[in-house]
Image 1: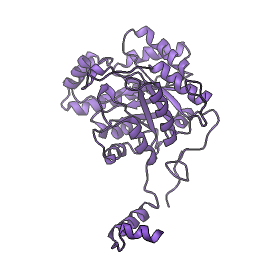
Image 2: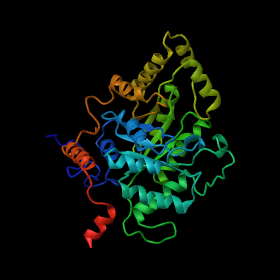
Image 3: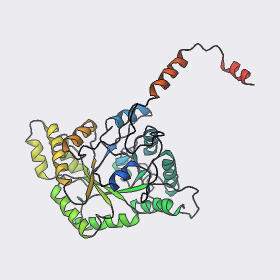
Image 4: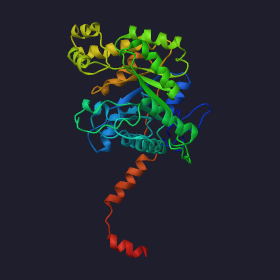
Length: 363
C-alpha cells in the first residue's frame, strides 16, 4: 500500500486540499511558502501539438523536485498549446500548475472566464503577465488586445476572489480560491524604480513573484536590500529566477536579442574558458542558487531550463536547496493496474452486439 504523501488529498490526487486559515488557495505552493520552506518552481514549455502525452512526458521530468510548474502562455508571442489546456491536463494527474495569463491575446471578458475555468479544474496559482508584443513572435500580423495589463489583471482576479464579483459588479456564486503571482525584473533599467514597481504589484494583489533570470548576483543582492528597506519582503514571497546557459554563444545571443536579460561579461568569459560549456553552464546555475538562497527575503527559486529540462532535477539536487525535503511526486495508484487490466479485457472481448442492437436492448 502506498503511504499518503504530504500535502495530498487522500481521496484523490486531483482533488483540492482542505482549506487552511490565512490561505487564499487550497494548493501546495502556498502551503510550502507559508510554512517557510524554500520553494522550487519551474516552467513547462508547451508543445506544438494536440497530444496530451507530450505534456505528461515533460511534466514527469520534474516529479519530486518542484513545488509548482508554470504553464506558459504563448511566451514571446509564439503560439503553442494554451496554458488553460496544459493546466487541465496537469491538474487531473495531481500536479500543481501555475497558470500564466498574458493580457496580450484576450480581453477582460475572456480572461475572467479563464480564471473561473482554471479554478474549477483545480488550478490554485495564477501568474499575471502583461505579455510580449506581437512583433516579438512569428505572427507579427496578429492583433494585440492588451485590454488589461499585469497590474489591472492582478486587481481583477483579486476582486473576483476576495469580493466574489466580476469587474461588472455581477456576483459570483462561488469565488475562485487562488494564490496570485506576478513577474519582476531587477535587472532592467531604471533600476531604482524596480523595487517600487514591486510595491505596486503587491498593492494590486501579488502574493508571490518570480524574477527574470539572475546572472548578476551582486545586482540582485542590491535589489533585495532595497526591497527589504521598503518593507516589501515581508509582504510577498520572492522566487529568484535561475537557469543554465548552454554555451557562451547562447549567452551572447540572449544578451543581444532578448530584452530584459542581463548577462555580465564575467559569465561569458567563464563559459568560454570551460572545456565543456554546457556542463559549466549547469554548474554556474548551481553556484548562483547557492548564493541567492542565502539572501534575506528570498523564499525560493524559479528554474527556467529551456530545452534543458532534464537538468532541473540535477540542479535542484546538487544545490541542496530542498534540504532533504521532497516535493510532491506522482506515484502509481493502487487502482491504476486494475483499470489498465480491465480496459485491456474489454478491448480483447468479442463484441457480439452491434451498437444498434445495444440501443434496441436498452429500450
